[in-house]
Length: 131
Image: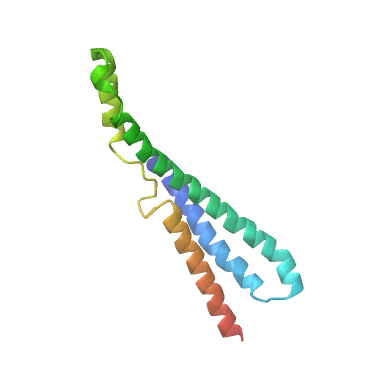
């Protein structure tokens, strides 16, 4: 998946980093007009980022559970054909699934938290400079 979608995910995270900073910059004016225009859009953009990151994190967690489930199968009571099938499953689930954005960052909750933290730090910096 990282090979197929890595570049798109990299651009997706870059988009959220840049747009989050710009939207918070617009919201930093703290006028009723600016908040009415940009606050709903900002909330929606952050909600999309959080939702996508939680989905990818859930995929990783489910893959770990799949590895344990295959390992705990009662293979010793199976016939030879089914044992071979379980062995193939076990080999395939050994490598954990972690999706990377073009090999630069892992896609998940940690990256999402970093983007949110950077955006809010930028917002705080702009609020202190503008005062």
